[in-house]
Image 1 (cartoon, rainbow, N blue to C red):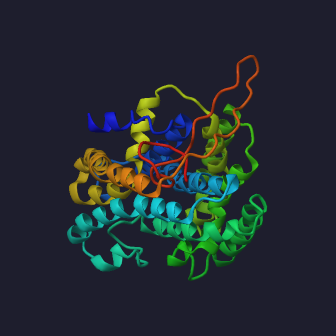
Image 2: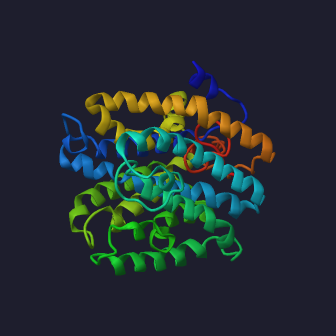
Image 3: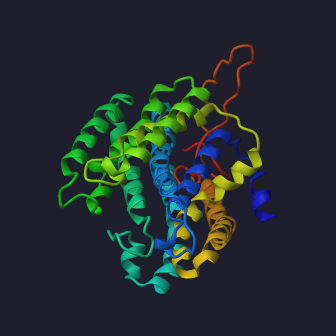
Amino acid sequence: MALRESLRDPVDRRAVGLDLVRFSAALMVVVSHIGPTHGLSFGLPEPFAAWGGNGVSVFFALSGYLLWRPFVSGKPALKAYTLARLGRILPAFWLACLVLVPLRGGNLLSFLAMVPDRGTPLGVLWTLQAEVLFYLALPYLARIGRPLAVPIVGGLLSLGIELAIAGTPLHATVVESFLPVRFWAFAPGMILAAWQPKTDWRWLAGGAGFLALGAITLPFTPGGGQYVDIPAVVGAGLVVGWGIHARPRGAMFWAAGAAISYGLYLWHLDLFAIAGDAGLPLAFAFASLSYVLLERPVMLFVKRRSGTKPLPEPEPPKLAGLPGVVDPQVGAPMSAGSVPGATRLAR
């Protein structure tokens, strides 16, 4: 009931398409970890696991769009931006650390500080490290004053660095979290924020095709693995582009899924190892409790303290034979999340 009521908060309107994209990305990551290797008694065919791993690319592209758009539209207040980022990512992460690190082993202080650690627990930590570095860099990148050129040029340079370390001892190490290496994965979303194209279902079809191609070619990527999966990053950008203006049915369902996506991302892998098959429903339960009892209250508190105001909505797409579709404000619980609810406009 609490989660349902929280999603009815009229503070902002949600972008239903991006709610769907965010929840789907979280489910993709969960799917990629379903198997005996991670503590479950059952598994999915390898192609499903490879395709699911592309959910990480979708998260990065979504972050690029949501967090770059306010800088394209104007100059966000640094205080509000900082509070929003800290309040969105740290409380839920710290809670997961306080519970999981004692159970799974590890240096609690190093995890709380997000010090590089690529083992267990919290195997998704490397992506959060990349996210935080991206957050820190955005205000400085915005000062360049070229919102479209920055992700294009910076993305190509970053991809060049990634390709240069592929297959070397630096590949698949903590270096993969460093922004000069990982920036290219955020670039498609940033390009969307600056370009603001009119998108439709063909973007989704193309994005799904590129994600499938990325799964197929995953074993043949430079150095092997997801770090240099170029088709997946392209596909992720296309899928996010579709989500900006999409209005799929089932808004409440997608909003609920988007709201718990960050918690689901944080908890699922270690709960699989701790509880086996029961870890799957437990992951959804812990994610829901984390959102209702911690994440949402913190976001409401941050919103009140920062006094943020919504940015103008993007121009609605013009569909043949139909009136213009009013595009809701956009954002996401993990990457944007400066306000409560599901997918909303980053401030």
